[in-house]
Image 1 (cartoon, rainbow, N blue to C red):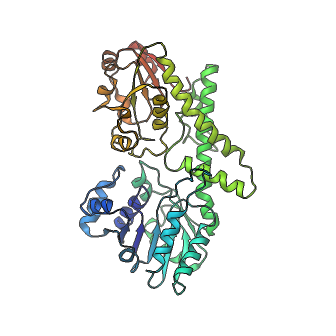
Image 2 (cartoon, rainbow, N blue to C red):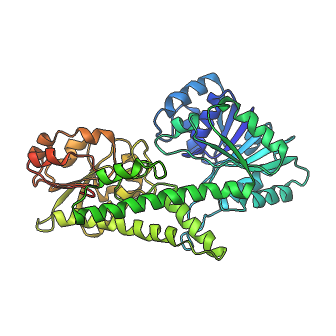
Image 3 (cartoon, rainbow, N blue to C red):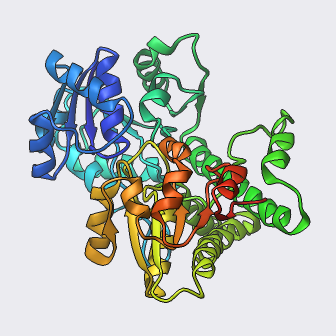
Length: 432
C-alpha cells in the first residue's frame, strides 16, 4: 500500500517507520526543511527505543522517504495519515486545530483516485466531519473517505506498541474505508482485536482512555499521601490493589504527577468539550487540579530538605517526562525544576536522553552534568524525577562521598530506603 503521512513527530515518525517495516511504501511529509534534510541524510530527529534501527533498515530498503512537498506525498497515496500536533489553546485549553485544518485543506487538491484520509492525531469529537467538509470544499470532485484512526503509542515504547497493539480502533462510516483499513492491518490478524465503530465514537475513545489513566495516576498519588500519614506503604497497597483484575496493576506507580504530550493536553481538552456539551466532568477536573498541585508538593519537598542550608545546590536526575524518550513536553520534572528556579534555587541536572531537549527550553538557567555522579558532586539534595533504569544502579556509597549534604528526595521510588539509610542519607520516597 502507498501511504502518505503528514507530520514527523512522536506519532508520525514511529508510525511511518512501522508502516514501512510492514512492507508499505511510505512518504512522510513535514514543512520543516531542516527536519526533512536530517531525515533524508539518515539522521533520526527524535529518540524512541528501537526506532533508529528500523529507520535505517527501511531507509536502505527504499520503503520510506521524506519530503516537504504535499503533492509528492499525497498524489499516489491509497492512505493519507494526518499526524500533526493538536496543542492546547493557551487560554481555553481546548485542542488547537489549526494544523489539522491546514493539513486537510492542503492535501485536498492533491488527492488522485480513491483515497482514505485518516486522522491519527488526537482530535476533538466531530473533527472527522470538519476534515471531510474542508476537503470537499477545496476539491469537490475528490473520491475519498475520512476515518478516525487513533494512536495508542506510549512514548518510550512506541515501536513495541506499534507491533504489539492491545487493540486497533477504527472510526469509519463506510464499508469501503473499513475494507482498506482491514487490508492495512492484515499483518495483525489473530494477534489483536480490531474494533470498528462510528467516527465520533473513535474520536471519543482516545480522550476517554487517556483521561481515565490520568485519573488513575492522580488517585494513586492521593493514596500515597494517605500512606505517608497513616504508616502504610504505597508499594504494598498498590500491589494488593493491582491483583484485583477489575483494577489491574498498571498506572498504580505513585510519583510527581502525570505529564507528556497526551495526558495533560487531553484531560484539559476533554474537560473543555464536556463544558461545551453541558456535561460536568468532576473526576477529570479534580485530576487536572490535583496534578498541578502534585508538582508543587514535590518541589516543596525538595526545598524543605535544604531550607536551613545557605545557597543550596540541588542535583536533579531526570528531565524527560518518562523513561525511554527525550520528550520534555509537560514533563513533571521540568515543571518541578521550574518551581525550584522560581525559588532562586541552584540546579544541576542529568538525563540520559533529554538534555538537548531540556536545553532548548531552559537554556543556561540550570547546569547540565555529564553523568549522574557529576550531577551530585557537591550537592545538598538529590532529587530523582524520572524513572530511568540506570538510576536504580546508583552507587550510594559513591554518591554519599560526593555530596556535601546527604539528602535524597526520591519522587519515583527508585532507591532502596534501607540502602540509603545505611549510607547515612536522610531519605524520603513517595507513599512510605
